[in-house]
Image 1 (cartoon, protein in one colour):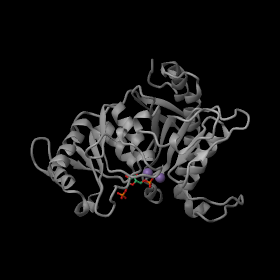
Image 2: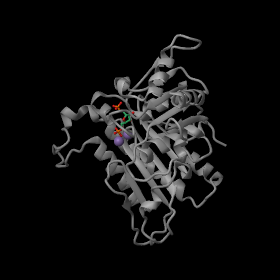
Image 3: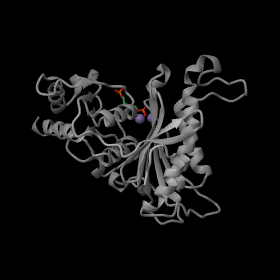
Image 4: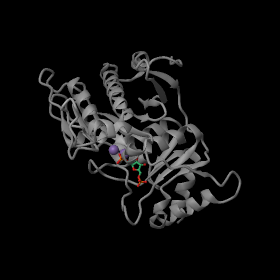
Length: 334
Ligand code: AHG
Ligand code: MN
Ligand code: MN
């Protein structure tokens, strides 16, 4: 039984037995993400001090090279999961290829792979606007005891065992699912612990917010153009309000709490859209469905798309169920 104010550590232990594979390995993995999140959070909070402590490429007074925050976050998450020896492979938006983790002492006994967008919304770093981290976890499909292969990473989103995000906002929150609803934990920075603040998060079935980069309007498919006009039309509970932060994590988080839809369609400039299926769309789609929302590429359920490459991009429409249904209707009828 989850209760408010429970720490994330307590929650993980208490809910371990409700997870169908109860080896504790997944719990340890989520624990290590929790740890890396705190380290990255600390660094994100210092981003505004860049003029004082040096920018990427500089050397700081301790003689350490300053890194860009997205590189830093990438290194921290990979290091934490590698050193603690709890995954057999990692794929990251920041890496060209997946990383196989060969643990010497346990002979590849680990069962999980992680896919990660270490710093989402990176264009917002320099302007003090919320950014995030997105993660997605699968059981490997190749035999335990052998190095991982690309097949372990190119699994459909409906095979995910857990997914979540961290939003580094006015508060820092970790929100995740293991397929049994979505729970949100807020970091108390004074104590350094995450507390359950948002149990059983749910998208309202209807919403009044649409989030899309309208600067790309002229390049959008006709169905999306028509849907945007529908959002702006004065009728019933419309016009909707437009809100676009430019960090998927933050836009998603707001829409889940208030009710809304996020759209990153394909366009005549980005023929497949911009967002990455494996690092961004699948984890967010899993969270959306677990929170009574919906995620689609305009025609197909995101979680049913067969991945063909690690850095594949797809159009992404995600949010309150009735709103996504409506957008799909416009796509079909265009
Ligand atoms: P990332 O910083 O990981 O590259 O992701 C940025 C993504 C997403 O977070 C955001 O919603 C979208 O790109 C914004 O793109 P535009 O600037 O093209 O609107
Ligand atoms: Mn991203
Ligand atoms: Mn990123």
